[in-house]
Image (cartoon, rainbow, N blue to C red; front, side):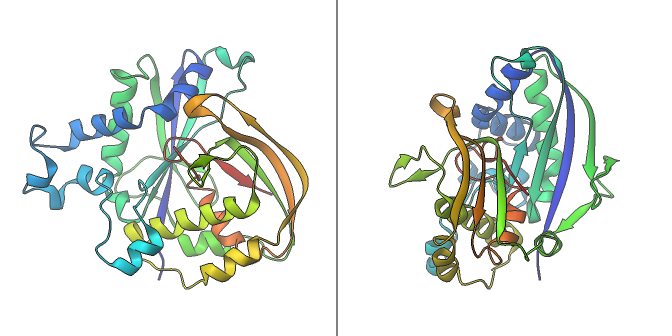
Length: 292
């Protein structure tokens, strides 16, 4: 048993790439409000008192209600938002200030896929009347298993099985390169970390993937996460090109590194996590990463 992920591509024409990309990660509350405006039939009523909440796309996606199972709650904690936007992070101060086309990627997990039209409508509102006003959505499509972009059709979407994604990674090498494609913001002991820590990164990916699988896919991984945590602590960095970048909410670690060690069991989680980002503001483009 596994769960599905959908990979949507939204091509957007913008006037200033740097402005849009640096603004979008902070638009979480506004995006939620845009989605609610298209999905909610009783906007003036508190969700907790609404008799329609059991069938409401907005409530399912944005309420982030915790499970009543105490064991599962201890393991998975509060659910993350069941989607993740990604986009090319701007090279601040470079030619990115010019206009052009940006490709936003939107990955949606499990049962939240049924709320995809609400998420796309909310994004369109953000570009029409919200903080991203002035942007023009030119094309929406879904990526198939070969990575080709197919015209968007809500009745015939290309779904990726989580099992297929995890099985598709190569487990034979003990070397791995990680590229952070957008600033990574991880918290440890209540403080933001300023240098890349492989074990902390790995545990954050495992926690995010397993939580999303449980809450939105109805799926529990059989992996021994305690043992995996011990394994990732033995991995060493043999090439470190990470650095801290940005300010305030957008500050985080960027760059790349090469790692050596026993990573056979963690790699499938990394592969799945690369669709979903990791860390703070991961639903809105922070913490994107690629594997080599």
